[in-house]
Length: 91
Image (cartoon, rainbow, N blue to C red; front, side, top):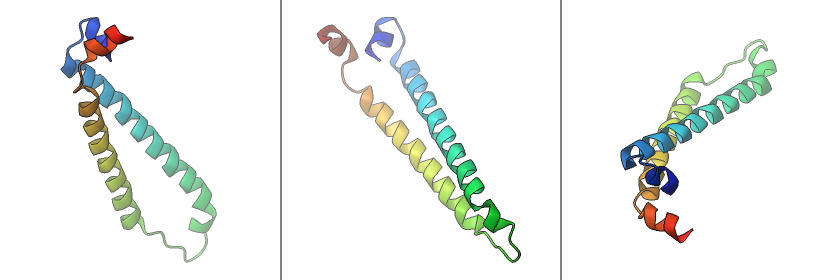
């Protein structure tokens, strides 16, 4: 982050880059988890009389996604609060 700042990137742009990168990782992680869970429970889902709590699962996934975005944004702001140029000089 300090190197990006030294190269002329504004703090807002760095914040946006970090947030986008981590948000993409969050979405990819959720998708991998959803697909693997579907593969694991597929035999049970196709059984006669099977019922999946779709509404509850959707709300849980939404809560995980919103929470992940919030904490990603929070961590991004915390990471860029300290003086980055001083950290680069110290390295």
